[in-house]
Amino acid sequence: MSKIAIMGAMPEEIAPLLEKVENVKKVDYANNSYYEATYRGKELVIAYSKIGKVFSTLTAATLIEKFGCSVLLFSGVAGAINPSLKIGDLIIAKKLCQHDLDISIFGHDFGYVPEGAKFVESDEKLREIAKDVASKNNLSVIEGTIATGDQFVASNERKEFISKNFQADALEMEGASVAVVCDALKVPFFILRAISDTANDDAGVDFDEFMVSSAKISANFILDMVESI
Ligand code: ADE
Image (cartoon, rainbow, N blue to C red; front, side):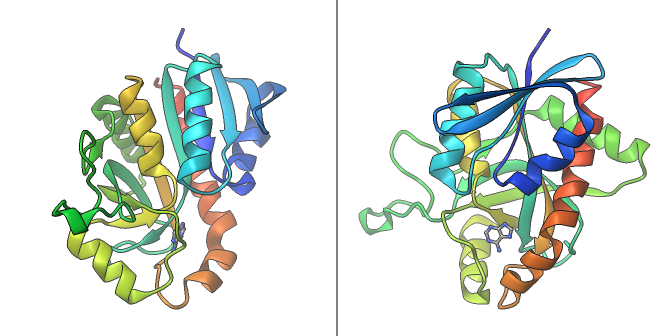
């Protein structure tokens, strides 16, 4: 049976998962805590990485290489770029990119480095499972591009840069690094985010107000998917 990794970046993103799973066993490793658990007959390993691309890379690689997970689901919150996304709405990443990766001085596209790729695509079957879960629960989800960077974006100017150069629908700080790890290690992955803010001047205030409720919306959806994996 496949062991399913579920990760978030912050404690609030995995707390709703830990409340619902069973047989939880905490394992400390590499300056982090990993929670082995079961849910509806499935084996899970749950962890939050801490914020950003470096910590999320470490956690994703550890979930796969040390804990033997063969599928990875990410649950968390994001800032919206696409104006149709409102606070609390869900977005599934079809593909992900690094908006702060920049060697454009050498003539390369933003987000591209030699031997890498500007976009990494997530697993199609997992996206299909998500769409089934959404329709069964009468929830609307959009599928789009998520841009990742090591910065909390709270400016229309930066949003416009990311929109223009990556046609991204939402932005956050871990998805693309997790995608790079899973793609390299050939582990199917899925990234889900619920909107906590719109990455504008008010983003800090909105994030503080809505992060917990949006994190819960995303986590509950991910748990609904687990049964079908
Ligand atoms: N995650 C949620 N909102 C975000 C924002 N505005 N910038 C970066 N990551 C986020």
